[in-house]
Length: 385
Image 1 (cartoon, rainbow, N blue to C red):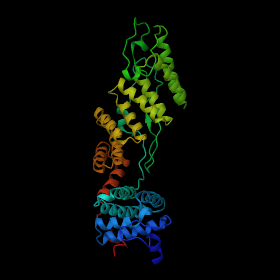
Image 2: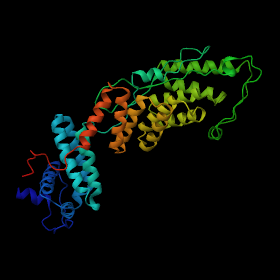
Image 3: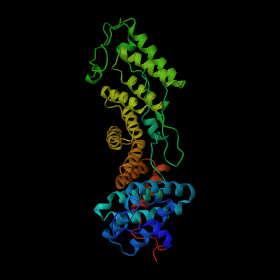
Image 4: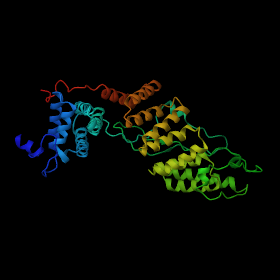
């Protein structure tokens, strides 16, 4: 043990001083030993100044980035090898250390590192990536758009992409492919003049002037290109679908369904920046379309723009308050923002709307475990003696 301590701490350093001799980087075993020392010290009443000395004594080898890297490796190993009860036990200890670090203004980043890792182990969820997923229940029926009369019925829902991050297995995500809307331009070729609609300012700055077409030529061209895009999307040729819809946009840039479907296709290709731009255009043209806002929210999650995603889910829910899927995804977004109490409220709302929503129940239980974590080591903690 004495030799190990000499390796961890420089023999020339004083209390709270940075080491003055070169020492090898701390190994994973070293960090585990230091973790045990922290647990033991905190359980015996270490105050913030003592914790600051402990960290300072490690010098540059114990900088916060080194701890963060080790905690990531450590938690990955625990999640892969330990059973849930053991994962939760280790996670609770890390949360205990995090709470102690929070009392020191100098150790706030250490507090976050231990807290985030502890939460990850207690919940067993790891890092939430994106679960772009449509709940296969009543909401799916509520949000289906029925194609108007005389509108081709081949526009079926297209699946879009997701990065599934939850440990549970769920259905793949779906983004709705919108049918081409009924307009005099698309359904009444004999109309004397097609309606004129001013293109959004943002669009006109980025495109060439919309070319004029004859009454006889425009309706079949737009309809044929739109349907060609749907066919290509059905076949998995999303790049081809985008190319077809780009031609539609050249003819008429004011059809929200085209921008929406184009955004969905970019999503399937995981080109989320382009998907976001298309969905923004769709929102400009159809600001009350809940499906567009839903898919816009998903793309922001994929880009890890969590604050923007939260605002987007807020709008989605304002447009359709009983959209269970939106409440669930907003809960996941709030977790990423470390707003666990708010996420808890969202999951409870989900279960009010759909009591058999298993994933929401699991998330709610995991959050409650974190929020109710003890503020002292477990009674059976071997380091508490």
